[in-house]
Image 1 (cartoon, protein in one colour):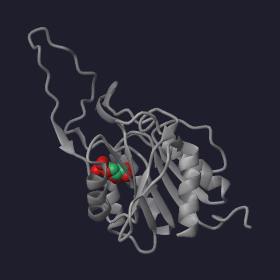
Image 2 (image 1 turned 180 degrees about the vertical axis):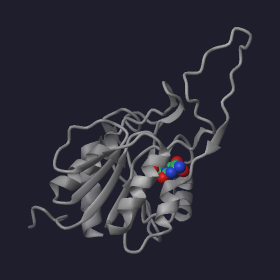
Image 3 (image 1 turned 135 degrees about the vertical axis):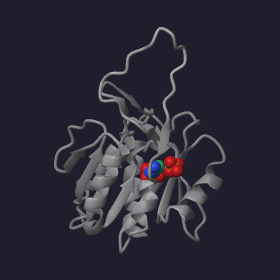
Length: 216
Ligand code: C5P
């Protein structure tokens, strides 16, 4: 029995939803609470890992290296600087697929003559895909939050994003997904049958994931 089986492992965990600026006071965001990523980071720390938590949400977790970011661009830069020396990347952050093309320097004022306001968006890079394509020995974990066709979409992500594992969850189901303390996960790996876990707390999901990682 080893109480700290992740000792010596460098782990990057991302958490929370990105905030893509529109102007100095507004952003486009999503409903991610960061709870799943924070649980992944906490359990990895408790198991002895050297954890870098790159997060858009505040945390009082101690004993790990916390890097606060807002946008997908910042998130990607931080991951890219830590990734080459890491052993595991857990990509739990909900990255905005698009960001405003232009960020206004000053607060945008409403115009009395116009009832419709248009914001043009441009695609963010797929961070997981970009970073995983530079993999040497790192173990890369992605999430797939879906509202339909869970397995089909998650299988595609496993292949397209070059991830070792995808943790898929149906965010339309009760007790799973955004802003709740529980999750129902299906774990997918290449050339293996998907494994569906019962509904459990996000901390228990994290414990089960790290246990899987250690015994795979
Ligand atoms: O494609 P989709 O957003 O469903 O994929 C989810 C997974 O990909 C998550 O692990 C998420 O952190 C990651 N992702 C990313 N960059 C994006 C979009 C998603 O790294 N632009």
